[in-house]
Image (cartoon, rainbow over all chains, first blue to last red; front, side):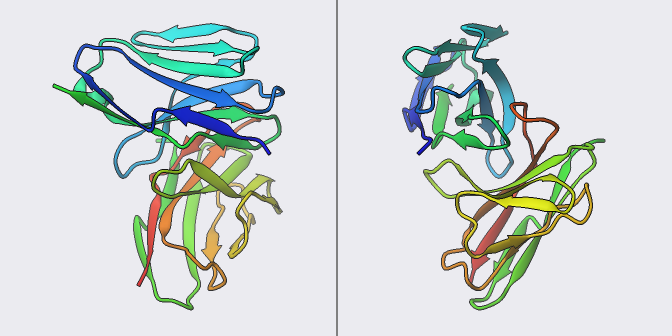
Length: 111
Length: 112
């Protein structure tokens, strides 16, 4: 069935370093790839998204890349700050109203 | 302020009891969703609704029920048939397919 794999499950970086989270999806029909940030005790919030007709998108310190051939997409956070510490989820939409989420990456940014 | 509101934030249930989790949105979104979140796992879809008076089972619907009598409201009932109900439940809404989902703050349900 449809599946999204996300790695790593935990990531620890020093403040100011970059963080990269990678996801792989199974259904080549997927055409929408959002990334959500979830802080402790709260619901996820969209931080960036990308559609299948675009290879890269950037918003300040956050960027997402998509490789449709390999069915990979990645989140890149540069100049990390302690407030970036959270759980990050990738997701893939296969059309209709269903979205498949990755298992999440817990990011720790050490000051 | 527009948003999506879940209540209560914390809920305790005795075994054998049904409980209902509330979800209300004032974003005028057509679609609403219920997800379950367990430690180390992604969000798993329980039910979703595209329009009023219509809803569809997600991947883990067994032991749950929903209703969609109003566009703004999508309550979830966790029945006694759900064998392992302790989890964090998230409600979301969205305007169209393949667009951002807006999540509530979640309800943490614990069986005691």
